[in-house]
Length: 255
Ligand SMILES: [Zn+2]
Ligand SMILES: [Zn+2]
Image (cartoon, rainbow, N blue to C red):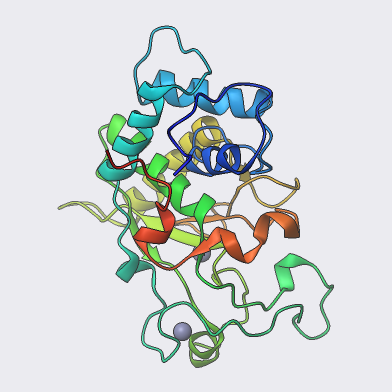
């Protein structure tokens, strides 16, 4: 497999670069367009500085950085059983229904797109890994998945009409410690949202295109909702959605 066998640096293009951009979606982050520009260089520098603890980050992906990416993926494991749709007959990740269908009476935009995407988006999952890393670095416990995929069978059962958790979103949370109450939970979620904005380049809300979004505290007070709903359709192509850990880390360089 190509990923991990060639040096990558600014100016490079192609699918290996796109995979790199997805892997580093939580380290600042940019579009996974396969073009190694300044945004990608910043992702690499951030990963090298924060995760690899390099004093002089190079912004170039050579063997040491590929190995670190591999280590990073193995260190922050994603529990796909926690991601799967709860209590329903969709096998966990929808039935690929409602493509290009929108909530009745609403504008035809991604916010109202009813599509059951075929899995959870790679960028959200790799970003969740970065969130775990930054939480650990701050001395917090690792955030857990509190809600992943929710298909329309489940939505209907719960009388929900949001399209958010059809593969583009993830809710994470920090379990309460002994003696803590909900206010502590809300405070911690709020301060961690700040970290996600600063370190991972999230926006609060959905103002800008092609950025990762966080639900503001008035919508998600005691949990943290991450999504990729503001990306253009080409960044939401089926190939970016996965249902297993093996699919997520397809290009891992196992030695
Ligand atoms: Zn379901
Ligand atoms: Zn959510």
